[in-house]
Image 1 (tube, rainbow, N blue to C red):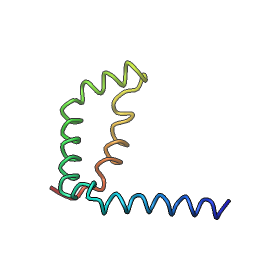
Image 2 (cartoon, helix red, strand yellow):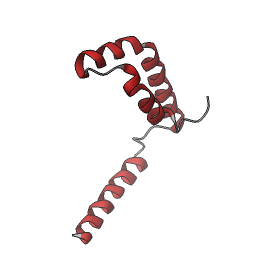
Image 3 (cartoon, helix red, strand yellow):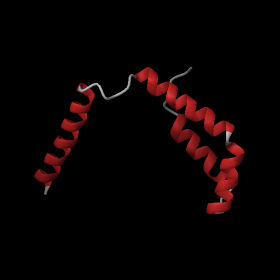
Image 4 (cartoon, rainbow, N blue to C red):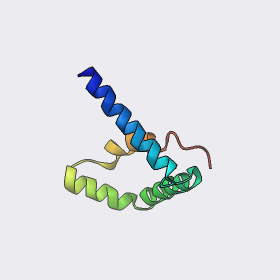
Length: 79
């Protein structure tokens, strides 16, 4: 089983490397701009997100807001 897992991991790494070499991946600057745009969208739509959380999951925004923000934004470099 361990050999099989190792082979699967090697295949995943090989596919990721091939995708990178093909030029399909986006430059870091593009990805950072996309993440910042997502952050702005979430901030702008906070009221709608809160209403959906309450309606669908019976959760208050504060119950999910802090963990989500920490997870999504913790590793972004300063703008």
